[in-house]
Length: 587
Image (cartoon, rainbow, N blue to C red; front, top):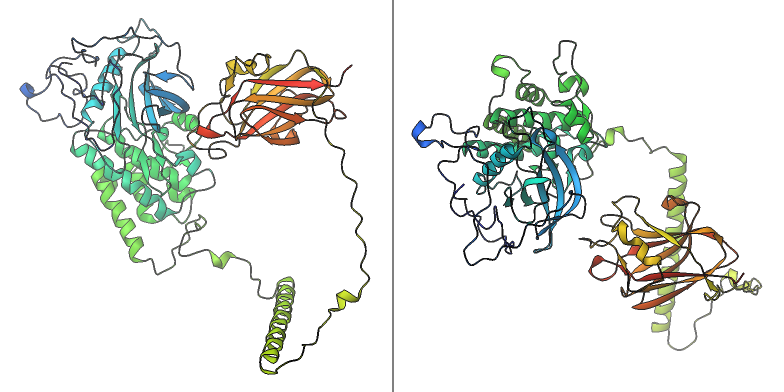
């Protein structure tokens, strides 16, 4: 590749700050580079002298003579928390596509402080029998195709923000390249159908947007690669979007059409009709097939599916015959648009029951399946009680109004005082309950040999390698949580430090040294070294101040494991703990 690649694409130097309002430049490619165009759609029919003639993998742009390029930093492995160049940090692995040698991650753009979706191209294990033992040529071809799609934008596809070519400064050693796209909020296909199939009309409306994106991409000679279930996410407003880019080099427009049919089939039946291994990897059930190897129609698995959607699924998946086959994304988009438009025209009529429950925001609810409560004795009794209370309230209000009117128009005189019957009963003196004994203030001797682990039931254990710094008695060594995008409990209910002793100790108290003022910590006792949160017992709740916070405990309840469960991270959605000290009764 020759020429200068745009700043938003492949780079070797530090990453510039990216502005969403700045249009993405179309990368300048060498006419002799044919790696990505040989298989790219839209080259058929182009004269031979206008097509690329050489195949070279994508390489980083050359630095300007005045630039000083620091040495490439090798990173061993890509896990949650690993940096990807000097700008991105990997946060959560979403899935993978082994056929493309790709992994899908939710990452953080540390410059613009926003989540992004990253598709990593892994280095393959060495294979002497392959022409491309480590996948370098494959990665170069995929990167070049990604660069050519830099100007493609559609509401059905995540917008490409950055392309990291092989050899980019700061890439981990096992990564050949990556594509960075805007993060698509919502749920995966597996999460969407976990509670049951989607209403037929909602499924058609969801896939319509993605089919429109595929249509426009095919018209520009591009492909989406939506035939993999983990590349697609369903947004909160019900649209199916391509969330992770960099499809495998062999993907074609016909594969996109099959992928659209597979997504519609999955939303209707909760089964993935294409690759069985992809279905297992995505947490979906593989579609059933007949003894002859054909897919079972969606209407057989879910009676009530409209005929037009059933036929559309079979045609897009290649199960139809003759004119029922769907060959292009444009044809599928037109048919889905007709289904959605027909549903909008019939909004005043109750829809045909298709086997799925109504959504809370649907105009027509399944009231015909609700139990008839008109002759329910309990409901009638509650109604009589409610009417009686209402009548008493009305009488009290009318009496008060009458007294006020009498005072206003009747001249002097004192209105009679009405004593309620309850006032004539003898008043019983309330004897206060004895106060509970105050917890110990934390006096005693220090507890030696304290070990600690990160307690994170739903995450990846923030900074687990440094959690021992919190109990080593040295405030200069610290442990911190990760910095979260949103406060708890948006992503998880909390995170904690589980401290363990050699034996059960009669603790009199503990101290927490932390500069994070405002963090809320629950002190809990745990029955084992690997408990669930439900198995722990709450002892006290404290809000940390900047410096040392003291917590008193009851020495009459010895415990061997103490959990400090952080439910509020404090400022910047991050908590730092310098040291935790435990004290017990003197032996």
